[in-house]
Image (cartoon, rainbow, N blue to C red; front, side):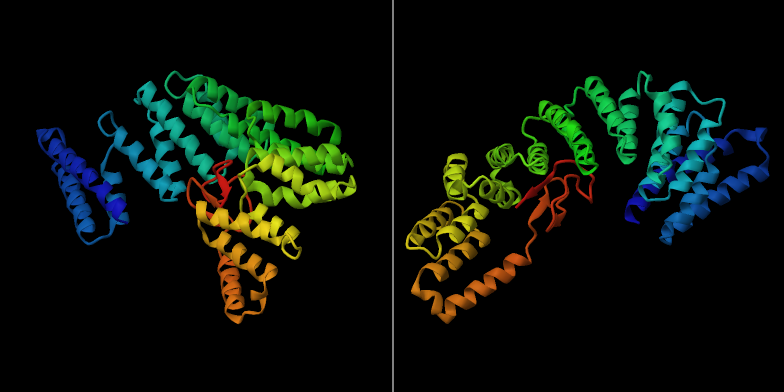
Length: 384
């Protein structure tokens, strides 16, 4: 509400100026009209003072005739309506603007762009697409129109069009879209893999990695595809590439990697593979695996040493939890009731903590989303 109040202060000022201008133009306007304008202005101010911004807004909008001096204010009001979720009001206001024959060409284009954004917000994708396509060749608004089209095709899950338009937007704006384009290719590949059109998957993922060589998702889908095709050697290499690209995604790769190596009869080589890929970059999931592998064996001290090193370099709750678990498993302190209570408490706290968080808006979850459900940003949700 406070945003609207602050916005309406200049609206009230413009309305007051408009009233004074009309009043100062002598007998060209009937006295009754002047009285109506003054009454409306003071009524709007009264609504503002009584913290009734919606009623004040209605009054000021009715008072402001559409002309070259007020069109910018009408456009701003329409944008405000859309941001507040009042899309119907925004659509009516922008349609009213466009219907004015006296509107300047540039103002008309901007009003069309705003109307297209209204339609997009309302889910009227066909209407939004038509307007964005009309504006694609605009000198002033082609970049915004292309961005709008990308959003339309993304919502329609038309990945071919989304990729093509994102490339056009990249060329016009100079802003790299490589990460987003890679995600679109991944969406296509996932769709093909689920539909069992396996012959198309590798080619699409190759394009994804050409767009963004650091796309973890592309290698994850490729690894899943190779497992579907019983190519366990190729699948294990893809999962190792995932870990090498970003060790934070270890937890998504480790179990299927173990399964692949078991199929190949190389289960005992898993730790060697991990050490060659991760080197000194052991994360909490790698430590958990080492704890599982060594914890109940004579060389469990190796796991304890690794976790102690991790605690010294980057202390955090999860690593501390792993440390206590390893102490439990590898020493006689497993019978110590205090150690057990600490381990249980740490585990409860750890389970209540999110595993993933969007670096753009802060949305947290236990599940991984390649597009943030909150802010709709692609490839922004990272493992914690």
